[in-house]
Each structure stands twice: as C-alpha cells, then as structure tokens.
Image (cartoon, rainbow, N blue to C red; front, side, top):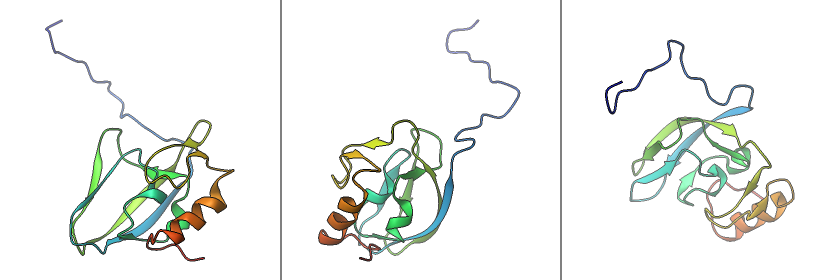
Amino acid sequence: MIPGEYFAADEPITANVGKSTTSLTVRNTGDRPIQVGSHTHFFEVNKALEFPRKQSYGYHLNIPAGTSVRFEPGETKEIELTEFGGKKIVYGFSGLVNGSLEEKQEEAFKKAAENGFKGIIQ
C-alpha cells in the first residue's frame, strides 16, 4: 500500500436507504448568501429562507455528510430532505427544538412563528 492510497468499492455508496424523504422549493429572501450543512435541522435554518417550514420538521438535507447547499440572495431551488435517524433528539441550530423532535414539535412551531421565521403559518 502507498501512503495516502485508498481503494474504492466497485458498487456505489448508498445513504439514507429506507428513510422518509421530502422535496421542497426554497427561496432566499435575504440580501446575503446562506449556506446550509448536511446535518442541519432544516426547520431551523436561517429565517430568511422561505419554504413550507413545517414540512421540514425532523429532516436534514439528503446530501453527503460534510457537504452543504448554498442559496444566493433571491435564488430559488429545489432540495431533497431526509428524516433524522436514531433517537431523533436535536440540540442547537436556532434553538427552536433543543430536545426530542416528537415532544417539542408544537413548541418549536410556536417559537418559529414568534421569531419571524419565514414559511411558518400558525
């Protein structure tokens, strides 16, 4: 083996097999680019991104780990999301959940509306 050498498998790598997915149209209404990482809880992304926010609850971008999607000012694009796995406990991001996705859902919707997140309709 040569240092730094790697051997790729012959078959393609698959991720998120069997997990629920959803597609959304997202528009950046802000005046600055917004970049969203692969494992960011999409419901909690920058409040200037406009999309049906409730539909994204419990989901993250369906892209390879460590990558991201960039939304330029005024740009609209289609994205695909996939559900979080495991215990479905989320902390950080915009602080809307900070706990169990199941237990904190209604509270998170209320916080998003109160804090001016676009696409959240009460």
